[in-house]
Image (cartoon, rainbow, N blue to C red; front, side, top):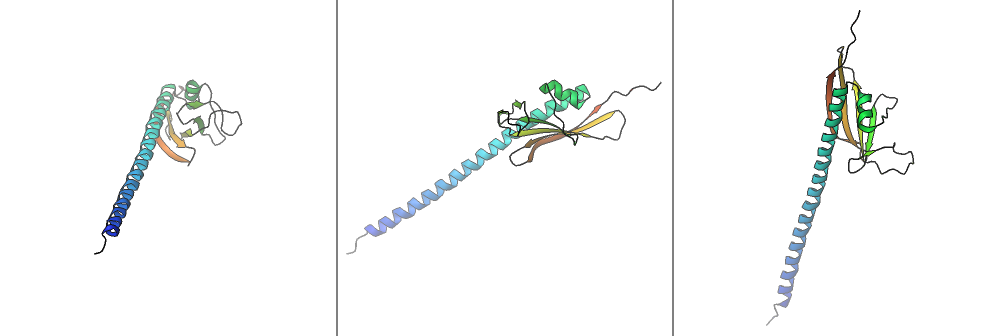
Length: 153
């Protein structure tokens, strides 16, 4: 009579491989869900930040004044885009990246572009939160507001 031990051993090895494959698939699903959760959390923070900046701009009627009110400073580049920088917890970073000030690592950048509305007395801008790591937009919106127009005499 032949022993059934090798057959039982093969059966156990196949079962072990099936369980290992199932565990790998579950682990992959957990990693993917964690990435989706982090992306969703970042988008939610970006939406709140962009909305806060947009409402402040609409209230003040001026981009520079609104950003100065929110951050105590304003940083505009030669291309006319206003930029603010934030760390991984969406806290404002008071320095420009790459300046060697030893400030926390910036992860996100808020950009405000003035846009010509084509209508006198109507201001328009685009507010966008960008991930610095891969330079992708996390959230953006366009806003308009009524500007003061001086009366002609």
